[in-house]
Amino acid sequence: MHKTLRDLPSLDFLRGFEAAGRRLSFTLAAEELFVTQSALSRQVRALEDALGAPLFERRHRALALTPAGAAFHRTVTEKLRDLAAAADAVRADQPAPGLTVSTTVSFAALWLIPRLPAFRAAHPAIDVYVSADDRLIDLARGDVDVAVRYLADDGAPRGAVRLFGERLLPVASPALVKRGPPLKQPSCLARHVLIHLDDPGGLMPWLNWPAWLAANGLPNLKPAGSVKFSLYDQVIQATVAGQGVALGRVPLIAEYIADGRLVAPFAKRYDSPRGYFAVVAPHAAARPETVAFIAWLRGQTGRGDERPRAARKARQ
Image 1 (cartoon, rainbow, N blue to C red):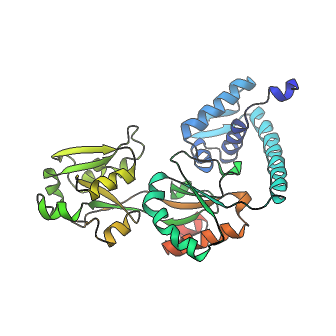
Image 2: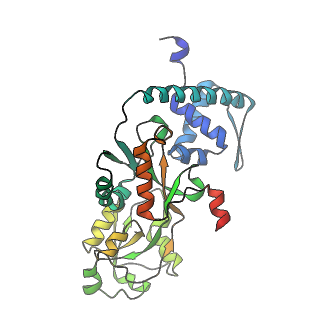
Image 3: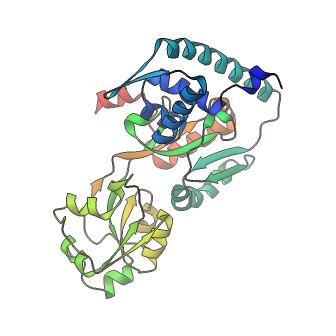
C-alpha cells in the first residue's frame, strides 16, 4: 500500500474532527454522531497526536480551531463530502434493502416491538430489522436507516422528529398495591423495596430514585430494600412480577398502565430533561420505506414535531 494512504488517520477520527470543528463543541458533535463526549474527545486527541500538531484551542467553556486546524478542517470537510457523494452514487445503483431501525434495548422492548405488528399490517411489503443496542450508531456509515434516540432537546440534530418527552412516576404491580404495605403517599415508600436502573457512572440521575425523592421532598427516605438491574426493561419485568416499586417512564410504559399490568399509586411525578427523537440517515431520507415509517411513528405518538428547535422554543 502506498505510504501516504497507509499513514492516513482513521476515518472515524476525521469524522469526529469535522463535526467538532463545525459545531465548536465536543458535546454537540458527540450527540450528532451518537457517541459519548469522552469518546469523541479521545478521538480528536488521538488525531492531534498522529498529526503532531494541536487542532483546537481548548478554552474555558469554549473550543476554537487553531490556524492549522482550520485549514485541515476545510480540506477534511471537502473530502468527506466527496466520499459521501461517491457512496450515495453506489447505493443508488443497488436494490433498496429492508428498513433498518436502530434504538435502545428498552425502547425496542417496551414501546416499539409491541406496536410493530400495526406497521407491518399497514405496510406488509416493507421488511423491518430492529437493531436494539445501547451503543450509539453513526448513521453516516449507511448500516442504519432510522435511529430512535433518547436525547436532550437542544442536543437533537437538525431535522430530527421529536416523538415525545418523558414523565417519571412510581409504579407497582396491582398485587403489590393490594397486598403489600400501603402506598397512599410518597413517604410510604419507606416500607417497600425500590427497584433501580443501575447507573454506575451517574450519567442519568433523573431516571433514578434519589432524584425523584429529592424532587418530592424526601431526600433522606430509606427504603425497606433495593434491587438494581442493568436494563430498564428488566426493571419493568421485575416490577410487573411484584418485586418492588419502580420509577415508570411514561409513555414508554403507557401500555402497561393502560392494560393494568402496572398501577401508579400516587400522582407525584416529574418530567425528564430528555425525550425520544427519530433521526433519519441521509442516505435513507427519500426512500418510501423511510417516509412511511416516520409517518407511522408520528401517528403512533400523536406528537411528532420536526420543526427546528429554535422555532419550537419560540412557540412555547
